Length: 388
Image (tube, rainbow, N blue to C red; front, top):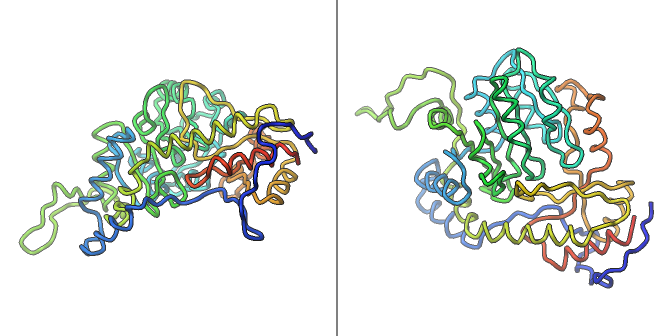
């Protein structure tokens, strides 16, 4: 379709200065100016592995972002895998999740020998639809994995009610969601387990990394023990021969974060709140500027939760034409991920997931990151309102 141009104060917005073929990017990695100094001090110390800086990083994640018992790990995928392991999920078990996510979410389920069972999503958010969960529960179901698509929290109260009724664990895939909240509680302090990603283009990066939060202190101890081979460092002193004294009882992993990465994370925590405020202002600028654009439908946002706004997405008609029109004016756009159930490993595309199939056809995202200026958002809005 070609939209009629909608007059607005943005008419005549000056396009950004771009090199030939260059696009305003979807993502940009934020590195705080103090990072070089902090990381340099770690390099100079030559103590690069897990140490005091990892503990400091975890303490600040708890104090500043409200995370409960955060264990810093080497990736968000490790967090998902370790959560499943600590939850006791294994061969023959089933985990219910939405397909609107990256493959890591379901891949970790397969890695522990369990089966991912896909539930449909809410077309208006991309998140799992609680109304489509219960009829998929079987005697083999052990957990519900809730993915907060784009940083917008799922309906956690409804999901937890289903979990309580059937004796299931709730694991949040909050890779997009540091800084988000649900009914006044920080994401990372609500469910049995919450998994975060600090990969390069996330809100908060350690280069690559993640964190796993456990609600109960007992389970948190299991997380901390099993993230380092299953050895409880606090209870395994080094003997006179120079060897730790321990007796493994189950499988552990080398999933801990390093001080080298924690130094970057600590630097990037500086000003995190201010950056989130700026990000939310860009989102509001988009929403205000793109009201009543023909062929464009916004995702919904309920007032009882605050999105982390990792993505700014909506639905459009004639999506390929939309992508091409923006690209011609120097603006990137992307679906980021379509439903992962199409992969043969996960059983192939499910036609019964009707809202996921519709979402696959119309969802799109435009740039949203720390380097994006108000002028650039105004330009993107103007380009979209010119039609496609």
